[in-house]
Each structure stands twice: as C-alpha cells, then as structure tokens.
Image (cartoon, rainbow, N blue to C red; front, side):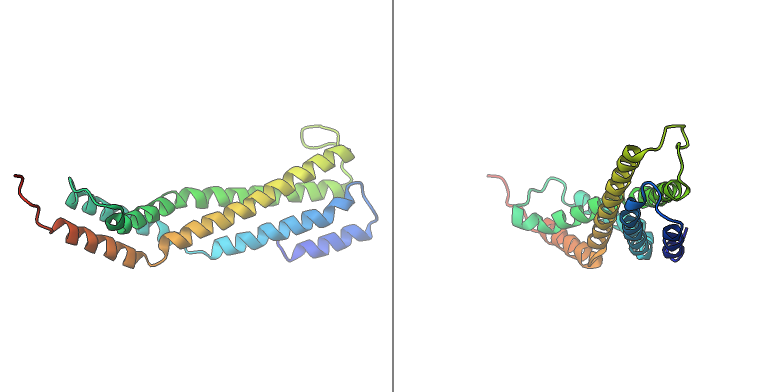
Length: 192
C-alpha cells in the first residue's frame, strides 16, 4: 500500500468498529510513516556515486602507498592519508548497505502491512497457524516497531556515511596526493 492509501485504510478500519489489537494501529501507522519517510530520503541520495568514488580513493591510496613505501611519517604528516583512508572505509560497503536497506524497507513495510491486515480482518491465526490473541499482537507489534526503529536508524547511518564519504572528496584526494609528493621528495640524509 502506498503512503497515500494508508490514511483512508485506517479511516475505513475505524469505521468498522473496534477490532482486537486496534489500539496498536496508531503506533503501526506512525512506524510505517517513519519508514516511508526514511525510504524517501534514502531513495533521494546519490548512491550511484559511491562505487566510482570508492574506486578513485582506492586507486589514489595505492599510488600513495607505492610512492611512500618505506617512509615513516609523524601523526601530523599522516593526517591527509588518514582522512583519505577514512573516506575509503565509509564508501567501501555502501553498495551492500544500499541493497540490504532496500530489502529491509520492503520487508518492514510488508510485515507491518500484514499485521495491520490481521488486525483489520480480525484474523484468528497467522500464516503458520499460530493463534492470534492479544499477547501475540502485543509481541508482534513490539517486534515490528523495534525493527522499524532500527531500520530508520540504519538509514540515517548509511546516509551519513555516504554524505561524509563523498564530501569534498576531490579536495581530500588532492591534499593526500600533494602531501605524499612533498614528503617523498624530501632528500634523505646519507647514513654516517
């Protein structure tokens, strides 16, 4: 069901009289709206930029590592390289995060929808034949609300990683590359 259909569905459900578990419907509606909002934010993000950005960072780090082979730098000198490596870590798993989150969004919407349908239909057993009573509904609603909350948090974390990984990436790459060139061109003193 799309976001626009849910208010009408809940209105019709309320008009049919109270059903067992109907007290959970406002919380389920709020959770579904939070998941839909997170999904919209997630879908609006530029996920396609993560893979080429990660490849650029990885390539730059390989060049820097080859250039700096055998060099020891202090903490201050190593900051540009640490920043670049941090960006690589943030972007590395982004494609997997995107797939997993999309699947979890679909699963969460479907599960909440099934739960709402079970309440609306006054279902007596679930798909596996387990009796649906108030305790069952309480547990199922608690589980789905917890899962939906974790999903919204996971979306926020993934979007934060994506945004931080892409932020001023050209500048981070340029500064790390320049630092490695400058450091590797310092003449070494001959051994006594």
